[in-house]
Length: 199
Length: 66
Image 1 (cartoon, rainbow over the protein chains, first blue to last red):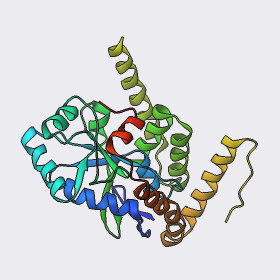
Image 2: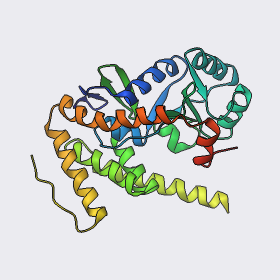
Image 3: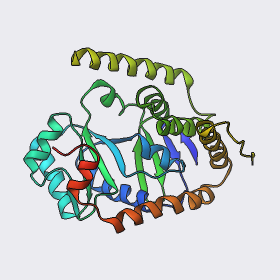
Image 4: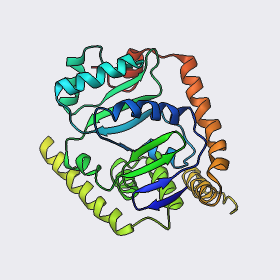
């Protein structure tokens, strides 16, 4: 795999069942809204040796009618929502800042965990996105520096620290370490604000 | 290819493997490393499809049953 430019990675990997699930879902999603994939699947796409049961994606906020179009299209193409059958209820979860999960009908794993990008960190993850060109289509992921910072300084589990290390090692000649620090500070500020709001 | 360095404990051992594998990914053709990675990922997906957990059980397991 190699960077073609700052915003594009060419990836010649053999596609697996998870990649095919992702690409099929994205082909529907991108007809309705813009998206960015974050977290675990990014490191897996880029070679990490682990599986995952869900793919985290931020989407740009939709009004209720536009969400209904997306939901109906997903249903027509053979997906179901794990959280509810009712479009109103699903939309209200998204409006409340919660994530909803979509899988192929009759299945639960793998699933897409879909969330509206509402807070600053989520909205900013659309900036400096990277398009990964695969044999089955393009996948938009958040920047590698953002991934590393989010996993290392916010999520912090062993699995997340390993994901961050994998990306850092594979792209050691492309990573901007100053940017990781900038994102680290933003994440910690946002985390502090969230803690203050809870008090 | 670099040799895999044994860790003094499980955590260090896992990080050493992450570095070792990342080195392989960086220095190999995508087709080569992805073929090995896919064995793991495809088996997980096939297993999940075989087990067929209900929506309710899955959300309960994730602590997301509303």
